[in-house]
Amino acid sequence: MRARERGRNTLHKEQPMTRPPLNTLRRRLLHVVLLGLILMLVHQPFSVRGDDPAPEWVNYYGGDATLYGEPVPEGAVITAHGPQGVQCGQFTVKSAGKFGALPCLRDGDDGAEPGDRISFRVNGLPTTAVPLTLNGSHVDPSTPITWSGLGDLWEIKLEAPAPVGGYSMPARWMATLWTRKAMFAALGTGVTALALVAVVLTRKRR
Image 1 (cartoon, rainbow, N blue to C red):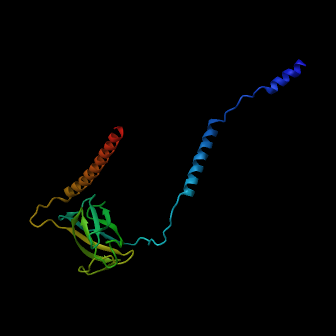
Image 2 (image 1 turned 60 degrees about the horizontal axis):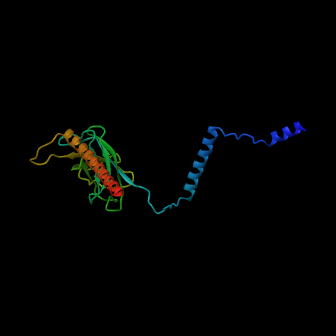
Image 3 (image 1 turned 90 degrees about the vertical axis):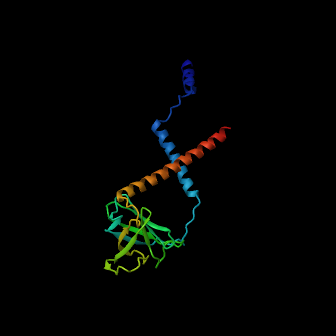
């Protein structure tokens, strides 16, 4: 009898709970997170616009680009503009005196459209652009440089002349000033953002 009672007591004793291994918990948590992300993506509203046209562009390049009589230095920025002055493309010079291909995108909002004349600037300075070839064929230097057609490739010569009667700053100095101007502009934007955050935090504390 005593043996039976001992057996019953042993059966009725609570068995110790075993915790799943740590790796198993991590896998379960990862599965939950992934499932949540999938549900968010599935239920996220989105729209597909079939009326958006595919991007179109014309390429421009050159091996003879000068700034104040010197080859355009590395780091200089050459931009392309439509007839309204809207920028349609840009290229950062990687080898002195050379640029491209510089794609100019088609833009119906006051930008470049087929037939529009395209102008160029070096670090924001206007240039004189002379066409040399179009799709590998020589063209007359008096030919207007235009947004001619999708995928066209213009070879042009760029020259940013010095101001008449003005001081000709070396091209490398201009590139340095342009870079510093962009740096200071970014710095000013960051300082303004920090100041706004500080104002918001101060008001919340009050």
